[in-house]
Length: 270
Image 1 (cartoon, rainbow, N blue to C red):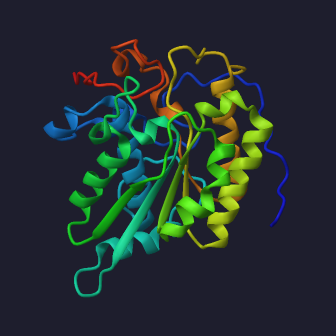
Image 2 (cartoon, helix red, strand yellow):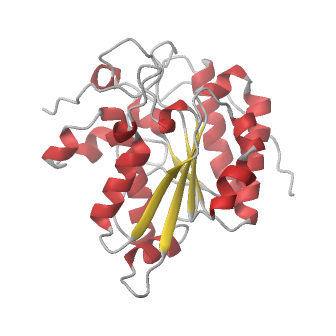
């Protein structure tokens, strides 16, 4: 396994603009003109799904929007073409969502709101876009887990299912183990996926109401910056959830029962 240099986590001021450093559209811009059904979905879930869809669509010149570091013209091209095939040339495509309680669907623990979690919404969105695809979106996430535990079971629980795409989402819980241990675990999972020739999308954490999002030294911001660094260094795709949602907390938070889980608050469109 190639050992890459450590990802630095610089303390720096956050940009006031909702656009990412790469100039991609903000969540509000991406949500402009969406359908009525999308308006009824929770803001966090809709935002992440739209960015995931954009990262896949952009591979063949589709929707712009996802903050990417891998080659946008080719990284997910094979997957997109595979999803476009019709019977009898199509095959079953497996997308794996690996991580903690957010992709697992936890809302107000112990309630698991599977059908408002982003893996389920991603499945629905992809089927709308690719009606001929035989598609599974499989959740291997475990509530309360951090990336070290996720890395230990990555080969057994994730790669054994022969995925065509893997999303990794551990930033919220990795605050408990710190950047150094988290970096090693994320690199292990990325390296194993790359050795199996499976593309990866890394997710920065969704906001936590207890985090100081305006403080670049806050652990949530530090882990998000580390995930961005890993995506750049290891040439994989990135969904920058924190950058998209930061500054819009009044739109995505209504019930303070769980400060870092998706909720059922509905986004109010102007």
